[in-house]
Length: 114
Length: 115
Image (tube, rainbow over all chains, first blue to last red; front, side):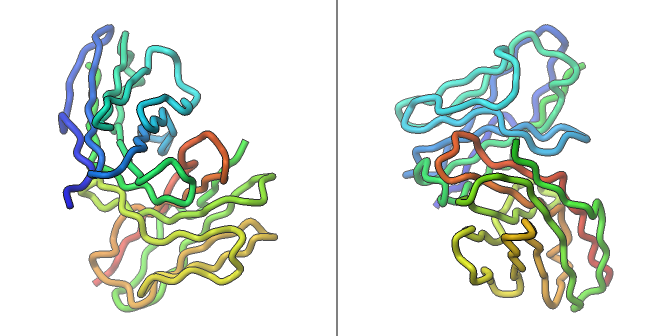
């Protein structure tokens, strides 16, 4: 079984640009979560999609947005990039949105803002 | 707001020895799940073990076991017979049943295995 796949592995942008990060969940998983792992801040919950709907978002500004496609893959968009957006962005999937379901993580996308 | 605290930024243990990583959390909820994740330098987060708050019995997965003290809001991870492959960042995480958030993570403990 293929795991969670994220692309690209590394993304370099400049301030003010827009970034798009992609995530393919494990086959059969309908829930996708996005987390930001910034230096010194730890892992923070960003967004949760389940069955194509946004279920909740963490404490991040509206320039962080995303969507989930009918095949359950997901995209995270970050507009008007700021230096503080430099971080590892991790995607996780679970079989359903039930809270006892373990989340399986991808390798992440390293976003660097110059 | 729920918080998860890992008070040990770094721990070191000799290979084959036992090490315990601590985690405390703050919540007013009664039904939740607790998790330990491992993140090796390859950076992929791997689930090590999980505990359901309503279960009194401590979870065990091979060399990994937890000491769950609900009243004290403590959830420590014990690694027995430490191996070089156990070297990684270990994150404690929490999720409320019925809540709308994803996992809430601690800041992590960097575990070093001395050969």
